[in-house]
Length: 96
Image 1 (tube, rainbow, N blue to C red):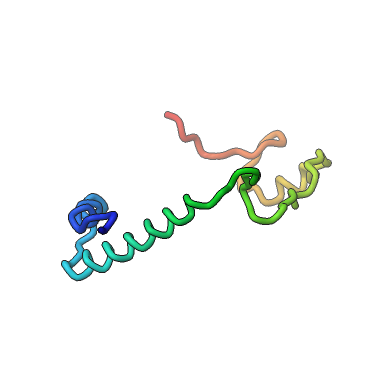
Image 2 (tube, rainbow, N blue to C red):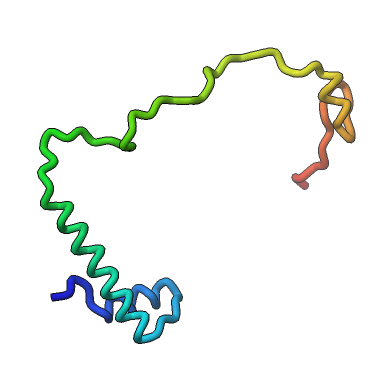
């Protein structure tokens, strides 16, 4: 017996605004049934004593340490600014 019905596939396709043919609905029903069957097989596995993981490999943070460092000199920053005044960059107003 199929775990998913063709009407359910058509309903989900309609919700997703997908136009599918009768042949596609049958094909997707068979494919989804195979996926559900495989998922049910996974539920039969004994996972007692298995630690939950977010990744199959032991991942470490590969980012550098976050350290405060001295920034660019203000003169260098203002060189590329199209408009500046008193050491600050002027930008167009966005609030009326």
